[in-house]
Length: 139
Image (cartoon, rainbow, N blue to C red; front, side, top):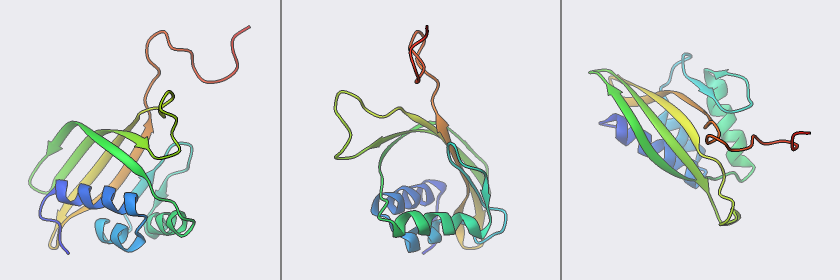
């Protein structure tokens, strides 16, 4: 199933994340040794190991409830960069303590079979001004 736009490929990525569907996730990524995924507190993962990562997570029952807000798009005829903010939710998230937002970068490339994801990277957002960083209290 080709993705006619970068947004269609991005929608496919988040649909696969939410459903925990490894086959759907594999269809989103470009078939290339150049693909890469960089998640918080993990080493850079490249090539076929990217899909191995998702298969491993999904085989353990991982599925994600993620709300995405676009911050900026940078697009050309054959490359697209989507800068996003992700809010991870779910039934076990306390209403009074939502998880921190995560900044993300999704890079897509257009090939003969449509748009595909080549890089997914995310990192925690910085703390709000005046907010205490996580960890033990000072003193």
